[in-house]
Image (cartoon, rainbow, N blue to C red):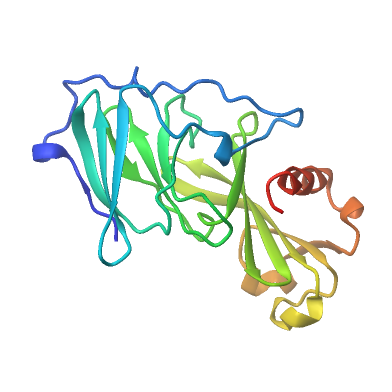
Length: 227
């Protein structure tokens, strides 16, 4: 589990690091999206040091202008660091581990008042590939649970909590997943409760072109990143 420690147990209100973490406007594509992998891995005056522990987790230290402001243990499966304005508040947050479909990640949000990072609360969406839409203030995750299935979830950050909006299950062989109650390839549902997909079914089709417009766009977006 994560443990965040403020140095000496004292908040850093006396220091103003907000200017250091002020986020640049991301460069989006024609559809308004960009990938988490397009986010910077380093910032001037900010250093994130990761060291793998014997149990596979990572010990992480965050230094701003040479001063250590945070230490925590991160349970992600990679130590790839990305700076991203996750909650669209204008300041960079730290995302660790967004490398591939089955690698689990952690997000640490910047608190502009307390001047430290804290872990965001998530469900199961912080693994896989990610694209973001700043205009809609939304993320979309894409992950694989088996050889013939992909799942995509549109979500946003409400304060420090992940809120699911809508999900798409893409199963190339529906007969392999009878527990989903899916008869056709694509199934769109509200929220992320796959166990109740049958009663929550919104739309299902075998044709990508028959999906709601936003899902056609999202699938085309991920085609750029998932091979």
